[in-house]
Length: 143
Image (cartoon, rainbow, N blue to C red; front, side, top):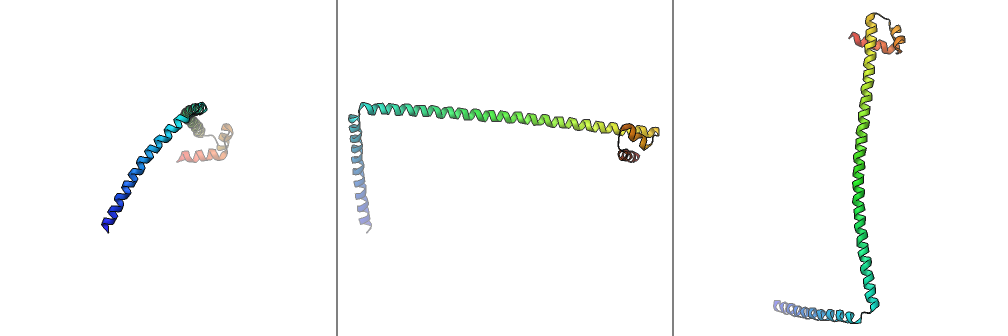
């Protein structure tokens, strides 16, 4: 049984080799026939196809360049936006510091007026603060 399989395999290999050789001849024959039967219009169509292919290639390259330019521009815009955000944060911090300074000035003024011996009502009208705020500062100052 194994001998029969080996014989069949060898026969298949031989037939395939012959078929491949025949196909090579057929391809060469077909190519030669096409070259002989080409008309000037076929040649013109081939040249047009070549030009179109080259134009498409150039367009694709331009698209890639534009794509990279857009990506670069977006990155630059992101950097600028980050800088603007940092500037806004800095401004917010400065405003907070100013508010704290204002609060410290209020506290200092209230403590100063309390040390002079002024009444809570007098301090609140003089500094234009709420009575509760003056009382709170007074209580915190005592501690």
